[in-house]
Image (tube, rainbow, N blue to C red; front, side, top):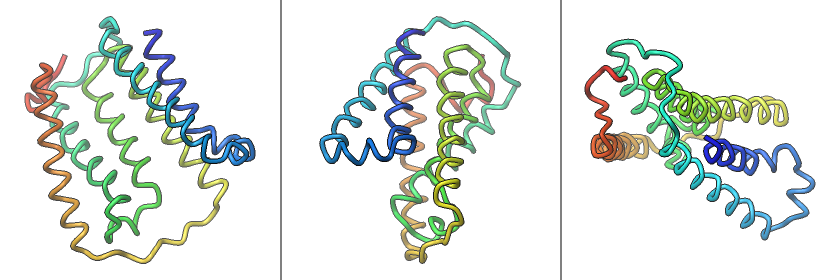
Length: 185
């Protein structure tokens, strides 16, 4: 749990650094971007190692068959995350698609994982996303949607999201966590 916690602190701190200390971040220039990227990657590595090695300490029992809701939320999260990359029509309808995707991802995983390490990991990243949205909205104020990109990008996004979903679910099955069973625990 210590590695998981340190990893989360590094990852979140590196992401929030520019928002909480914009002057210091600006003075760091381009070398600062590389340093923050290394901190994020180190944090991510510690998160993976810490989560995989964390003891199973149950906090709550997930509801039966909630895995189906998890699957739907995960597919939606992939679509939202990709919307800001492909910049089709959907991108113009949602102010923070990647943060909303992270919130959906975290929520989906909290629905099916009731152990302490999962609550720490998914809860922390979900709260970080909510906090980031609040910080951005407070700093930038009212949002003016950008002009929409071509609809074909959204169609491509759906194909990419379904393909990634297949790869992710296959990886979960390979790791011994079949997301299509509906019930977990």
